[in-house]
Image (cartoon, one colour):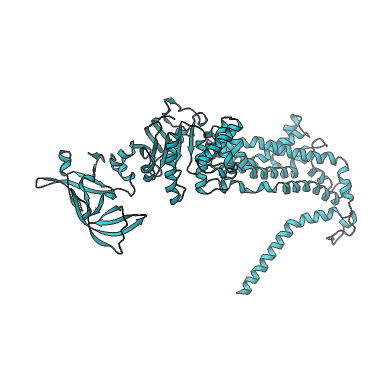
Length: 361
Length: 277
């Protein structure tokens, strides 16, 4: 188990810079999510950690050792590809045994370890099958089994849930988290889905265009994303953004927005009157006026669509031409668009400077 | 409406029959000729079935002159040349498939255009070089030439087969701890096996049937091949020995067919299905 450190990693493919002076430290024994949209550079980063790609600049340290020049064979990392990369001409047993055969373990040792890990993932009965005979969920487990069968310094997962259907993804998340806890390993998990990070990760690194724009404990990053891109990526459903201008109305400092004037007292002298700001509001902090208590900012809106998922509802509303998304923790259906009074607690908003995009605390 | 469909079916049937005749026809005719006696071969109009079938050609043609050693030569040359092409071509195909280097496409197209060069253009310089090197009428010469002739096709086809295999498989194998060479022998090779076998067999057939180089660069039983012998039966002292020609042709054809039939399972491309989910 080890700590991973990346310093100044840069990788170019011709004209395109995939990774731009990237620096990150993944704590030992943590489940760290690498969160970013497709094209952010997550897979490239994982491949550089694995040693399959070589960085143009920068260094990779595993457990304090500089592994930057080492080929993958010598690095003791395990990687699960998005496509699983199972060897189609080998049985599940041989696929999982592959890392052990590379280490020239004895036949009986290999048998034992393979049986152990297959049992751990509940796939013992698949040992004699070939990859083309497996379902998506089974193939994913075999890929994970192959990575777990030996003790690696770090386990790299590249969007392993993307190829699974929705229901399978839900249960797989629970199992992955349980597995990580039980094995006490260091995991770096690339995903475009904030839900993966929220439900499984201890730490999260938000990646945009080849750079890490924020890194920290998941809860911290979620509650206080330090700029607008981070706020917009890390949230499901995505964050609501409302533009506003700081104004003095009488002797009160407010943020004037198209939907309402928001009391900005708590920001005190940090705001410049006349400057533009962006207010970020998570969908589950907006609700109906009756439900929100003190420090509430209320406004009129038209709720035009609701979408029930399980026992929760995503609502879509429009107020003064601003689109807002709501996340209600109960089932709420509307037969047709209706006018509603919505509100949110003023201390739940996040405020960003429009020009610099940085968080104002 | 029904009449139009009926006519379409008839036309389709006609085309299929024509195609079958075009493919099976020459083979059938060769077989039938090899079983006719000399007199019947010369008949006009020709007979489509031997009236008095004879096995005389089959029994004797291989033991005439130096035909048996020549028959053996053809096999040895075809197999050696194909193996040489495989040994030289596999690393080349892998390099071209997996790495991009300066001049790669130029190199590949150059190899291809050399193959298009008419043999007649190069046979004379090759003859002169071979004579200087004392390699005329030797098997190594022919083996090397055939390998060189087959390499371009081999490299292009195998390169495209290798490209079809996702590079993630090799990467994963190396992350597991194996060397790149191990990845080549235990991941790539098994997965391109159907294509590899097919191409190798193609090279064997091409080597068997090659005529120009063999005719001009070989003389005695040291390196002569079957096509040369067949050509000598056409328009020699005894006129056109069609019976011997047909039988020798079949002696070359049948082993190749048998090999194809024996390995036809391996030519199925089922192996690369289900690789990527």
